[in-house]
Image (tube, rainbow, N blue to C red):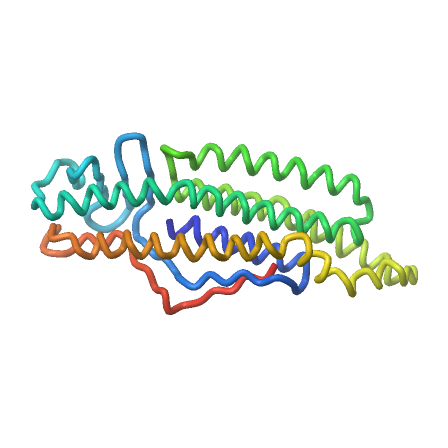
Length: 253
């Protein structure tokens, strides 16, 4: 969960880098976890490479730690059921946020490319192919019955690292060419770029902000269930998830 959220924010920031200043999306919480989170048809699974326990699995009110099912109180059984239910309910929202963030980023990059790319049609084709590839990757990492936070974050990170250098390099090259050749009309279009992008994606960015806020609230609910568990491993709480609503990240689109 931590990785996917930070990757989404990175994708939004990349959009801002390419489009200069414009619409802002404010994500007012930070999520941290020592665990990689996976959701299967039957279980909620959390794993980590270091620390104890290495594996935490929840299934219909039962709790599996490392290599055995462990006894839990009736109150904890209800909390585990609620945790799994809330985690599953969160998946469609997480999926929508990831795809919408990608949409907004690619739309903004495409808008900039129209004015400043040396070959707009070629760059548009590359962006379209990169977007299709990202969709395929996201489909592998998240669905209604499956979620893997590490995969989700890695796929978005790959899209950023593969697409942005190509796009930014093309756009910068086009802008420099306009400057050196005295293409005043092309340079003047930069003045209205923020407004154009805002008109195209502004309402979607605000909707994304609302969805992100809802996701944060759901994460806090999961954190509260986690904190309320009576079960102790080696005398310590599991501490599966930590949320920090007081910290703010701003991603400029």
